[in-house]
Length: 267
Image (cartoon, rainbow, N blue to C red; front, side, top):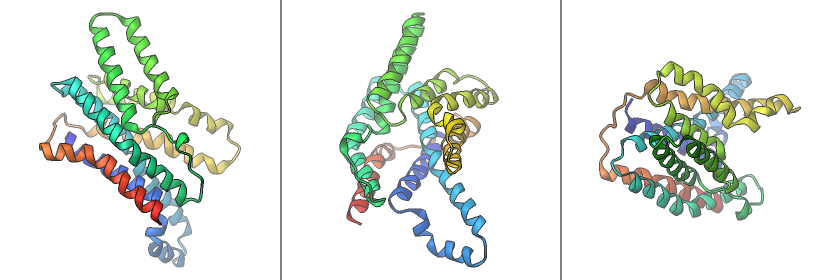
């Protein structure tokens, strides 16, 4: 599987996840659920809901992999980071509209001040930190490299960027494990994913409501499955990506948020 295919899969998974948050899949597939219910397959309906929820959890880990892989292959790291950062700025208003629409869909009040910075801000910060860390490691300034990683984690969390420190940790894991064998990467990412979702992971031991357990597992194991896709199937090839398609992939994020946000607010 080449990088172009990975990006397409990630975009489709992201779109499905965001569509489900504005137009819930149980409503879109209501005739199917009714038919299964009439057939006495209530348990199957529940299992299908859970499996479909995993689709959306695959997107972010694949994007995190692609952004680090892009760092290693780009000829101009500065322009690469600028493209991601500019897209982050352009996407923030659509991101706010989308989150307000999601709250509107479920009848909850949405405060703009409580909406995070979108994931591209996290990716931009992560790329800057990786570039700085890479430079410091080449100069053997190991302590400063560690400080740069910690600082990026603190900034992502303190500025309320999507994914916070967890996504920064995963970005750096892809950076450091790039040349390791696939089986070793798959093994090492288990504690990394748990650490990146530490607060959620601890709910498995502290949450008294058993209904929360499937949600916790979904958000931890689902992310791990997303990480396994590029680790296990990426062939190292870029794939045929034209300039138009490259720009289209950057534009897809803010545009689909804007469209879904408007649909959600106008419902």
